[in-house]
Image 1 (cartoon, helix red, strand yellow):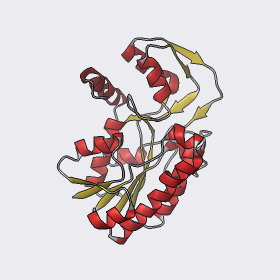
Image 2 (cartoon, rainbow, N blue to C red):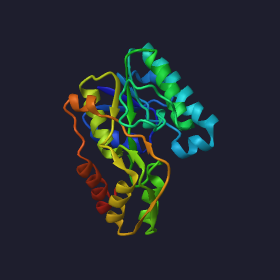
Image 3 (cartoon, rainbow, N blue to C red):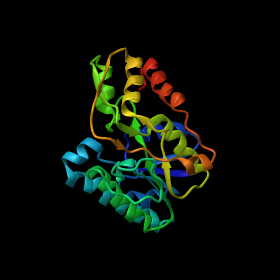
Length: 254
């Protein structure tokens, strides 16, 4: 299978590792899609969470407009468009969000992703994943400040009333490979089990050996329900997922 990725960043590099039996090509624009003719396009290019919210025009240009234009080129050659979206298309008032729940973006990052979802879905032949809180030692997601502070040996301050569904980039790449291989299409949540931000921070502190301070903030639940993923026979063990981070740290690959 010929698989296109739209950037050469961290997620793409992990995909290349798990897709070692497939041909992976770089398709950063519509012209390259037409030229390379991949069977599947994984829209890995994005302006990450923190930068999207501080620079909305840049986020709209990449997360939305570029993604849709590349998807249109993919549609012309019959490729499946695979788009990693985000749990931040929701506002956190409900939690355990299902694929059919009404989106209400919490921030501009979520809005830019939701707009791209709509455009790509309108073309048909797609797999759109609402991904939980992605993390690694370097990924620019919502968890990076906590991981970075802990890595630097600082006390980390984490809210106990904020709930998320974390998933490491390493596990995400493995699951994505399975979904592509099995020809899964439509909308699907890809995330780990629901946990509080405080519990996640505690795991991080145990890894790096520093302290955690609980802070109070209004209740917010951004967790995803992964029932559909489980129905496909894919289950995420949060302990095993987190151990992948520990393994990468031990060998200096994270």
